[in-house]
View (spheres, rainbow over the protein chains, first blue to last red):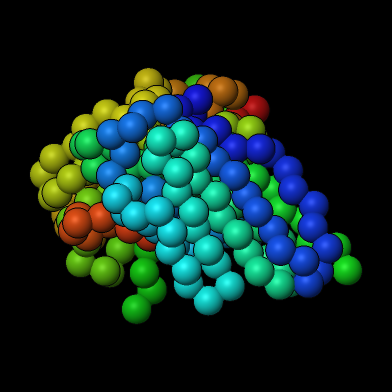
Length: 110
Length: 113
């Protein structure tokens, strides 16, 4: 929905880093999430960050949160062809429900 | 341990027909959700069930009904399908702890002619 916005497309070369950006409007977000969707499949949770943190690292994934600017990013180091997918940013509202962005299609080229 | 399963995987309906999408989970989760996914719009919540016996409307409930049959099963019914309901439908479940990790089924692709 319009409460969570993402760019629609990102092209990256294999081996480079990918950065996917997300902005949200409601500062009452508790947790923020990144989900991955491969073709023909459901969404798979990649990682999440609590709103009082500014960074979280998990292997090749780094999440940065700028709470002041309401900006969330996901960095994928050493991007591989298997990382080609749609990536969804989501925020958890005060009722515990998730609001998703429209998704960023990431295409990894050799 | 199948996680979250959905049936059918694909369905074609004519306008005005009815059908029920089934979702089952073996994760012993309390919360279950139905979303629809449309190009350029992400996922939108149709209905959810915080626990067995309760259901609540989400962002786009019109034209749908749900039943939380038991803790494992949550069905979505289209009483009179419309072309605007052509979409991919996802069921999800969550344990409802400190944070809302949702686990998604593989989806049902519905085409309404």
